[in-house]
Amino acid sequence: MTEKEVILTQEGLKKLEEELEHLKSVKRKQVAERIKVAISYGDISENSEYDDAKNEQAFIEGRIITLEKMLRNARVIQEDEVDTESVSIGSTVLLRDVEFNDEVEYTIVGSAESNPLDNKISNESPVGQALLGKRKGSLVDVNVPAGVIQYEILDIKK
Image 1 (tube, rainbow, N blue to C red):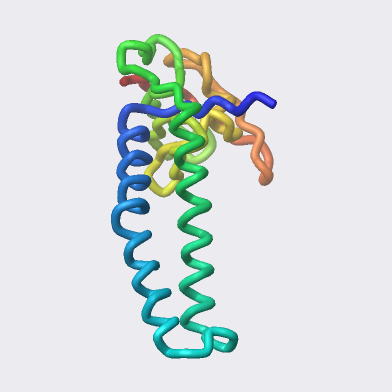
Image 2 (image 1 turned 180 degrees about the vertical axis):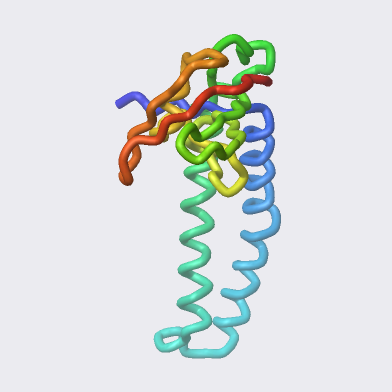
């Protein structure tokens, strides 16, 4: 089975690499110390500190494996690949909600680095999918659970 390509911006790649490094160099040691302390309390069969530390260790090791796999399958979007004529991954798009006349700015990123709270939306999200390939001035209908939202693309930049 082929593994899914992970599309990242340069910033997203850096964040994943930093997270991986932090997990390997800091968190692993912290959890190992917690396990060591919990074992020193004696009987581990009913030791909640030991159980918690082992669960955290399993989570950290799982996250490390996930990050390593993502980085192995990463395709980094270079800034010169980002088109300002039409929306693509890496584009920052200024939109106007036609119904409410509200403006919002989104950066289109791969799903691995999407963070709606930071206005980074996935190319696989309903809004991201609807915007891809569209040009400045276009009206775009986005199907969302609440119905259809219509946006006008006001600007596209890198």
